[in-house]
Amino acid sequence: MSFYTKLESLGISLPAVATPAAAYVMHAQTGNTVFLSGHIAKKDGKPWVGQFGRNIGTEEGKLAARAVAIDLIATLEAACGGDLNRVRRIVKVMSLVNSTSDYTEQHLVTNGASELFGEVFGEQGKHARSAFGVAQIPMGACVEIELIAEIG
Image (cartoon, rainbow, N blue to C red; front, side):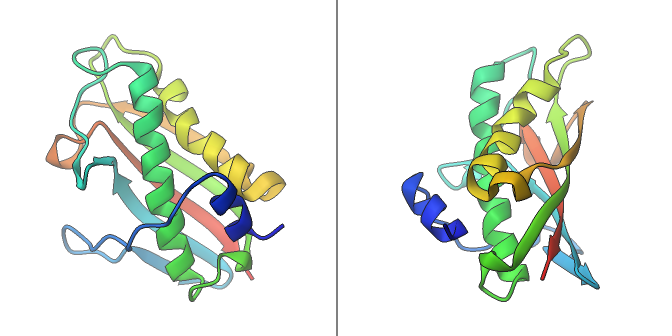
């Protein structure tokens, strides 16, 4: 089954690739490794604003992280020259979760992205991961995630 068939079965249409908000590129490649810049959570096309432990909960955060994963897949497709079937493996995911100092469920928020990568890419979607609580993310977004993948 192609990754496109899986996306379609999940009812996911990939959005247009985001443009950089500052002085960086959305992806960079060296050899067969592609590095995707951090993508912030968006809701209705605007930053999904919130801070965990203050005004947003873990379950909503999982949805925000899933939304980020969809944007990352769109950027990954662009990095693959328009063919997601070139993805060999999602290698590493790093998640920044906008949190109060006493919030400790960053790993559960990040599952929203990790689980989607597993659904779309199967075994190739299993990855190493870090999830950090941070005091703030650009534009007040609740989650930012970056990704490293191997492509063929």
